[in-house]
Length: 110
Length: 110
Image 1 (cartoon, chains in turn blue, brown):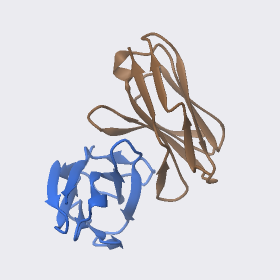
Image 2: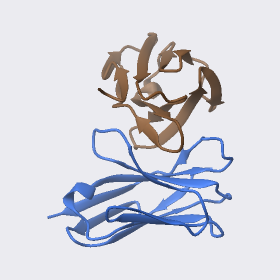
Image 3: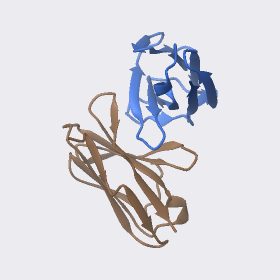
Image 4: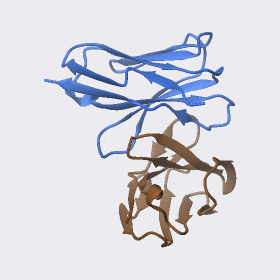
């Protein structure tokens, strides 16, 4: 079952904050976040394995609410380099089979 | 020194032809994957191999046949190509949770 990401697209000015949400209809073992720039391969940002866990990567952090089967990615003080499509991926059966959401396109304006 | 490499980068071919895409990783990872990303950027897992053994086979038409001669290589052979096969195909490898993606092969079927 594909996770649902929201919003589908975001346009921000440099320095603004953004939140991207990912929700699943099934109980999750893990949530994975990737960023893909135009014409490039997806790049791993972080994985969240436990409920309520928050992880950070520079000014990008994420939370995982196991009970609500949701994860959120937080981008603070966005930079031009943050532009791209963000994908959340979910692993339900702990079998490395990651099902990706449809992605959230983030565009940062100078 | 590319971690995950794919050849060719671009592939343009006629309907009905058979083609192969090669993937190699020099990270020493045990698990390799093939993903398909369509024109709407939907990233879908096709196959995964762990140490040359097929682990995931996601309802992919049997025209698609992966082959892993050793754990550093995972090739994808496609028979009788159809218009709907046009997409970007990504190879990836992982050892724990992070997946490293190759640069992608853009397949165009005319």
